[in-house]
Image (cartoon, rainbow, N blue to C red; front, side):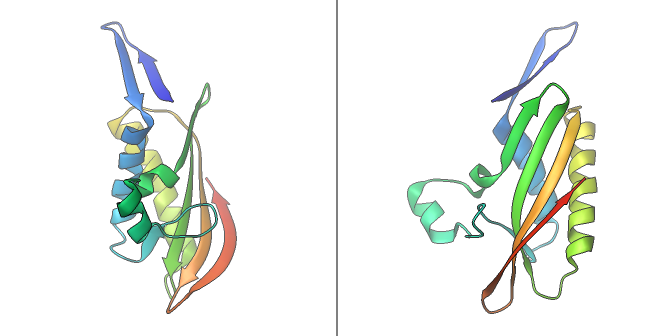
Length: 129
């Protein structure tokens, strides 16, 4: 899936991994308090390293005529405000995609799959923005 933009100089094509890396930069600002999971709430870790998959493969990125739709599955450390993390991530992802890539954003959805203390407590909270 590619994001395509026509300019007078030519065509600009962006692979979904470029968009995923912009999203990952925003997640990294939480420094170990937020982890990317798959839709079932499983963190990649060791198995991703063995199989050669990246945790960025777990991001759902769709390109539509209205813009880019991003769905992220996250686990958040216990004690960190879910509202603060999701609101800040949604705003920062929108900003980075529009500023750096000039990509229109249709929707950013964050699904909190769990909270992590000693063990992962399953949750299924979806926040859209």
